[in-house]
Amino acid sequence: MSPNTVPSSQVKCYMHQLLSGLEHCHSRHVLHRDIKGSNLLIDNEGTLKIADFGLASIFDPNHKHPMTSRVVTLWYRPPELLLGATDYSVGVDLWSAGCILGELLAGKPIMPGRTEVTTHLHAISSCLLFIISLLVGNSMNLSYSMYTFVRTETREMLGRL
Image (cartoon, rainbow, N blue to C red):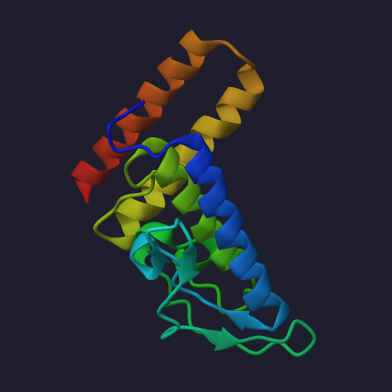
């Protein structure tokens, strides 16, 4: 376990609270639209609270209206918002929650990027790695080779920008 990772029992507890909080918001037609670590408050007893509803929006799945794609902090922004979508729903908060889960398990952000392009490329390379690992099964050597290839290609593309 990395020194920055959280014990799995705590991860389960935090994620349960986060997803329960999001379910509470979503059932009342509220999208938070900026789920990230610094917007999650945890007290000494381990109680998690979702904070900072400054980018929140009301949504009605039966009467959709265009919304801005310039929401959600870059590292937690889902692919559809990176691509400029204006028609979205609870998935944007759930993607961010998934990024929080990955961050808690890895001990560091899983989709870092300084620009939309670098974040885009990181997300694409991560998705490609996942798809390739599904296609080749449990062959760790091939998956690692493909991972190395995808990471190298991503770095080369970034170097050309």
